[in-house]
Amino acid sequence: MHIPDGFISPKVYIPAYFLSSGLWIYSIRKIKSFLRSETLPFISALTSFSFILMMITIPLPGGTTAHCIGIGPLSILFGPIVSFLCISLVLLIQALFFGNGGITTLPVNSIAIGFIGSLTIYFFSKLFGKFKKAGVFFSSFLGVLVSALILALVLGIQPLIAIDSNGKPLFFPFGIKVTIPAMLIPHIFVGIAEGILTVIALEVLKKFDKEKYFASKY
Amino acid sequence: MIKKNILLQNIKLILYIFFVIILTIINNIYFYFSFFLFLIILDFNFFFKKIKRVFATIILFNFLVSITYSIFIKFDLEYLLLINLRTLTITYLTFYFISHINLFKILPFSKDLTFLLVLTYSQIMSFIKIFSDLKEAFKSRVIKKEKKYLKLFSKKAVNLFFTKSIYNARETAMAMRSRGFFND
Image (cartoon, rainbow over all chains, first blue to last red):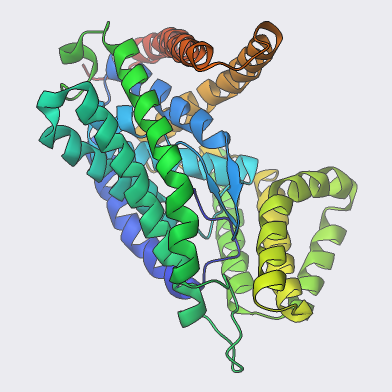
């Protein structure tokens, strides 16, 4: 899902760095209250789980990828702020050590996937809390679609804001008429897979004491 | 000595960020080409090793963008060179940078974040190994990829991932606790 280096104009990624820096500072302060010897193993395990899911990618026409993001368990069990910081760490490791995503696109990817995606999952899982598994599935599905939509919009505005004197694109060349369907249609299937995996992950984690190890009940 | 080393790492980080921004502000193929040549000279001994990794990372995406643009919009060599050289140079610079710094030393502003990063990174490395083992095991045991086998495999794989990593991380967390990292 995340955008690689070289396709986003500095007009977008520099303001995005300012915005995400504020969110990173806030979440670093906030995560202190969550980090205990009991919770840390779970946070790091769920973060690594997200990393592995993001590594299994299917390239999409237009230069991005489709893959699960694994933010559901993090967001539901620890809240969107912890999830945002953990996903940002995953994206940083991917960009620097594995060349997936990119350093210029890190804030855009972090905000779209880590922040907005996590917030969507958290909000809808609370809203549909009484439906249990169906609620978890639906909220994870929506989280993927909303993240994909944000990234499609960011990519799609590039030919409008980053062009040379002859009107030629300098970064990503396709507009939102192309990026929105190109991103959303494959991510419907990704969303279904994400929903199933989140339900499985939460089932597996059910054996652990929620009060002791997680920040919130589900 | 340690402070000097951290300072040096931070200077490298600032230089890296500066060059990445420059590479996206100056949209000129000659500039990208010259910068890439400069990187080759700077990193000559490891060039062939790194360039393989760079190509493996970017080829699929850049190929897709280039081919889609050439077919559906127009064949514009200048534009294709611009986006491909930019991505190539930034990715090479990133791999060059990461081979010359210690990321875990650059994040000393937050002890919590550094520990989380170290723990997560070590988990990721062991996860990659488990994942490739599981994939091979699935391939060798299942001839026809039926839905029920996939579901069972996913459940078992997720269970194994969590069980293994939680126990590993618990051990690390206990070691961290004994060294006074947690205040609980």
